[in-house]
Image (cartoon, rainbow, N blue to C red; front, side):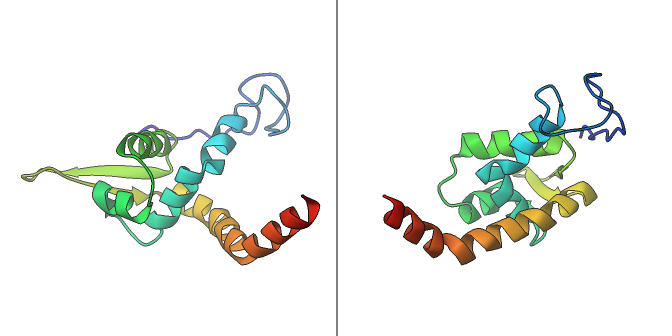
Length: 130
């Protein structure tokens, strides 16, 4: 697992602190990852505890194995989740949120809830405007 280094100044040297609105700020890559629907859903599913790949794929209906694999790798690369391989036949691999992942899960949980609570209002507004 590669961990995410949190700096007080921006490593790009383009500004004195992280600023998601600045084009050169590397925090945009993390925002892009977390704002991705499959990332947000995988993190939400893992709030329930460690899960195997097949469990996650069944929970995240509609995700292809390729996209789920890519998403899980990216989340592992930034330290959002841990991948644990258990030597067994067949091989047993589990994914679990790290402390950083659990902290990211809080606002993502609020966003998912907001979407479910407000979907009907959003579609009503779209039909009125259209």
